[in-house]
Length: 77
Image (cartoon, rainbow, N blue to C red; front, side, top):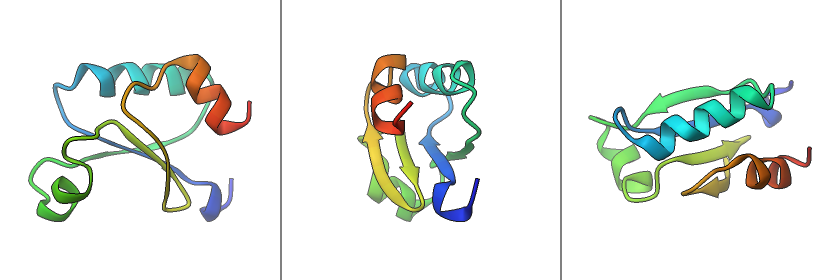
């Protein structure tokens, strides 16, 4: 995986949609970095109402409900 392929999941502790997204990414064998937006004013401004938000190489590729089928589609699996 190159830097441009790096997956980042912006989430918030206690967010059930975020927990589901993490589980689906793991089940699909996708390496990702989880970033909790709580306490970061800029991340809260950018993603606060949209978590979970998945980015690849710094570009938002999906947000909201991230089930397996949707993740497969946006990740090209």
